[in-house]
Amino acid sequence: MASSTMNNLMSNEIKQYITPESLKRDFDVSISSSSTTIHVLQWNVLAQALSYTKGNFVRVNDDVVDFEKRKWRILEQIIVRRPDLCALEEMDIFNCFLENELPKYGYTCFFVPKINSKCFLFEADTKNFKGADGTLLCYKTDLFNELSRNGEQLPDDGRRETQIFAVLHLEHKPSSKKIVFIGTHFKSKKEFKTSRLHQAEAIIEYLKTKYPTSSHVILAGDFNGDFAEPCYTELVNFGLKSAYRIKMGDQEPSYTTWTYKGRDGTEREQCKAIDYVFYSPKGFTPKAILQLPSKDDIGPNALPSINYSSDHLALEVVLNIEQ
Image 1 (spheres, rainbow, N blue to C red):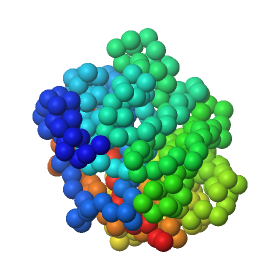
Image 2 (tube, one colour):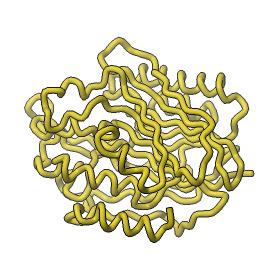
Image 3 (tube, one colour):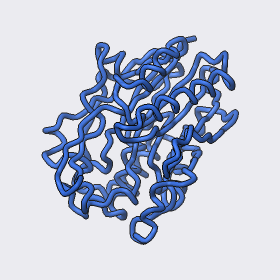
């Protein structure tokens, strides 16, 4: 689809619903698409069923997470910078909304729902329950040939929700390179760091078994653990690198999620970096990253906000393809 046509669609179908304007963000360097770059978006969009405010996002007003408004902000943030590949976690509005919208902007989609999604706990909330959440992968239809797709379960720790990862094996048409693109969402909460380690090990074993010679791997997701956790170390020891860490002088962002949550009748601030875009350094070099806003930019009530629809900030990376 021509760029001018897509810009018109953005104006006609989305911008009319975006009031006030969304949080402004820029790349750290000027970017332009080329036959040797791939632009990747990673974002936990916040499931609609889990966006409730009472006892949860305690500083957020109900109108901020109203579905009829929020769905347009989610769509806007997915396509606003025209990424080539998207990994979207906690996605529960694909079947009811994005399945029809994203193809208008030139994307092919692959959705892998969780078998026993936490969203089912809120099935009685008919306004906000939209089905199981899961991971959605998208790619520009005119830029890639799809070779295969797979949805896989991660190791189950015996608790309610089984985590998953989604895999696309793609051929990048301009470079003819075959790319393994994985999106995932690891187990949350501090006490489950061992579960997250096992989940990282499972993805590594999958790559070793299915794609032992691939030098073009991109792994994006909400890993629910910081850079000091065993799951992060396991992925780095396997040979993957974090794009933001490389571009930010060997340090991760200060946070990728910032919230005030209600816990046991008290308000607790949560501010941490747990989202990453990993890549295989033999196949890619990070060229640009989308900069993270300051807390002053976001506002005192944290995320989600009137200007931003999720409790996680999107990460975007432009990767140079190594020949």
